[in-house]
Length: 254
Ligand SMILES: [Zn+2]
Image (cartoon, rainbow, N blue to C red):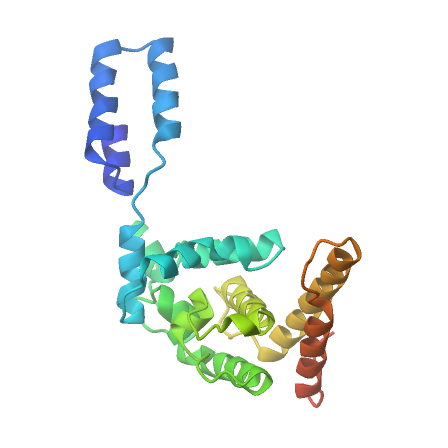
């Protein structure tokens, strides 16, 4: 029964699960069964990500071609060197955050409303992007990044979550800076999930300066060790200085 439940939840391929169940009857309990099950379970890695892809495509209102989807799947590994930021992107990609709506589906007595605006059935997209309480936060961030980079297509659900904006190869450093900026913005939103107030964009500015400064130090280290064919540290530092000059009139938190 557990295996059937597992099959129902994670949508394993039919032949594989039948093979497991058939073997359960054939071998009976015992160490052979345990060994076989262990081997079988660790090879059952071909979980279908089609429902996840379809969900994203629905929200983006367009198809994600195969190469684009591959890049989306690789994004958690490439977004940053920081394990914490990789994990945030992984949770975003797999929509793994426990929203009020999701918790309510597990525990029907719980409150499914958004803690910020009280919208009933607050889903994933609402909690991260659509909530009116987050409007100023996201507008401030995308406007500032547009001023900094000249990109005008950053204010969208696809851009902030999957990096779906125009990414010319000759501006890799700029897109890398934007990716870092968005993942830090998402970290602040998901880190204050249950709070009544939205995070302030000044906290995001502080986070971005701290992380971008650390990234600059790592780029310098890479270059001193000869690990990079193309030097990036100088360009990154220029972007960081430009960002700091954009916000110089704001009093940032320490
Ligand atoms: Zn809300």
